[in-house]
Amino acid sequence: MLSAELINTQIEQDSLGWTGQLRGDGLLLTLGSPLQPLKKRPTQVIDLADQASIDDLYEEPVTNWENYEIAPGEMLLASIEQPLRLGTALMGMIGGLSHLARIGLFVHVSSPFVLPGWSGHITLELVNTSPASLLLHHSMPIARLLIFAVDGHRPRDIASHPFYGRKTDLRSRYADEFSTNANQR
Image (cartoon, rainbow, N blue to C red):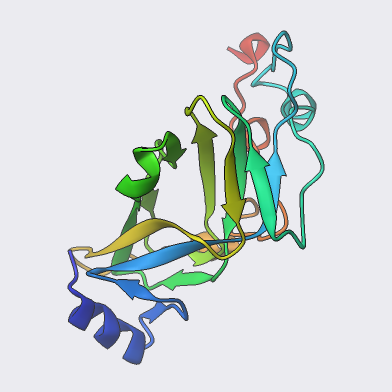
């Protein structure tokens, strides 16, 4: 794991693109726009092999927001305010802030890794497990990203991946990327 000093060195050498704040030995991730709410339909079944079925899960994105109330049990996709660019010899690991976990806000509990070569806005999954609604504020600190050096140089161009790092489209593209249709097996 890189220290704050090594992170600053990577930024100075342009191996890491980050304009936000550091917190200890990591990058402080803050909430940006848009937010992507999910529809509240408890009986709906989403077919993971059908992208249209996945797309039907989402409400319209919320942009230009200052405050957003996330209800108990609600899941929300949230864009990070600052874009991130990792060199091919760096990777990141997202961790939620324990202060938020202690009130029931889970931040990005699955898929915590940001791969070498990443460039764009990170999307986080937020889940309110609290018995109360929680009021989110634009630009509030929400998570931390720890930076790690990767052994050897791994050329990777995920920046050109059609589904990752796009600030305006936070939704899952699972069926578009992975053909899981049972009829094709």
